Amino acid sequence: MLFKKFESEFHSLATKNEVGLKETLRKVDQIIQNEGLVFKGKALPFSVQPLAITDEENDYFKRASEILSDSLEIVLDAYEKDTEIREYFSYYSKYEKLININPGYERKIRISRFDCIWNGGYEFKVVEPNACCPGGVVVLGKLKEKWFDLPIIKEITNSYEKKQFLCDTPNGFLNELVSAYREMGGNEENPQIALVNYAEKYSYELEHIQKYGCEMGYKIIICDLRDLKLDSQGKRLIFNQQPIDIIYNKVDQLELGNEDMKDVIEACERGLVCNVNSYSSMFIGESKMTLALLTDSKFQEKYLSKEQIEMVNKHILWTRKLEETITSFKGEEVNLIQYIIENKDLFVLKVDNSTRGENVFLGKYTNHETWSKIINDNKNENWIVQEYNEIPSVQILECKGENIIKENKKFGIDIFMFGGKYAGIVSRISDKAVINLGQGGYEQPVIALKAIKEEVASI
Image (cartoon, rainbow, N blue to C red):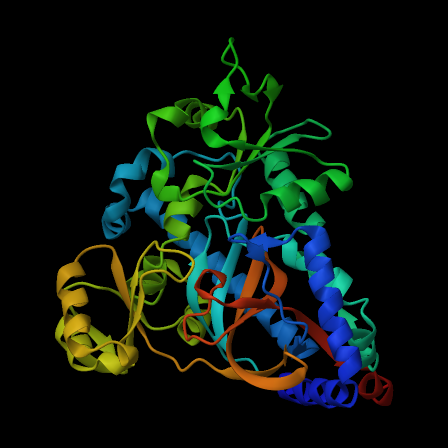
């Protein structure tokens, strides 16, 4: 597999040139400092050692992820039309007014990310959908752009043809915002974009989106959602007298719908502003319960094509709502609650709408008493259970003092989607099985490569 071969090549080169590796690490630290790349008050954790995928793997990720994205979009359409599906997501009934707002564009999920388990080849499993406001849409691409220019990276990649991902440039993300705006009828040549958070939460990345976007000619401000108001005539949504055309939400969706954002809600209802993502994407598309629904045979028969069913069954991790029911697991009919209590090492428990790796419990690392209590306290609520998959590892070179050492790290891949189209991949690595920046993980660049020698030989 290329990612293992490339890992070996990187280690060999770095071992022979320790001075070069240390200089590369120093330069990356300097880039992060100069760019002000900070997460939770600390320098953005970033590995200089990349994860490599083949051109063929990249093409397959594109095909598979776009079919899965279309399938997820079908869930949102079904929620709108099917009372049984709305009942399935009954936890979100208190947000129904928001969810039912027509965004004015057809595809409701504009910016999203599939978090996946992958260990080479064409086999991957989607663990979570991220269709509210996924992190990493701009910062990683900009850092990767500078990382590619470092001497040791140029040397290790010079025998390969490299393919750039759409998510490697801020333009891909920002163009998608404008595309949604155009689709809903917006005609400002250079629309005003507002990057919004709520009560100063989840501000990570907004300043960098603004900085890079403004450098490219976009008009971008950052503000709190509560400070957006209708003008005196009720015709435009404004911030400090500045009309707003596009809102990009970087928020906790469960905090939305309060009285202090009533002007924003009215503006969205009346089509006065382009709201990205749509509220149905932020609530239903983000919900981990969608994975359980997509793998339900009744839903598949009613809504999905044969190709979509095959792709869902192949690539979505076995997922069920945590509820008292009879279901199937590996071809066997089981009492769900009883079975997962008795076979805890096979499963993972999650709160449906938690982010950043919070409220995730792995059965094999949780004692039986605690496991049983979590299940019994939260069954029939907004929790899910998933099959446990062993998380693959890579060996990463790190500098400890004056020494270069190899560290085994768990890793996973994140597939970005812009407008339902494949935009590329990033990787995250960690000492823990729950891989998330919020849980001590860090970012790893992904590169799609084709060997130049092989390409020439085939001509």
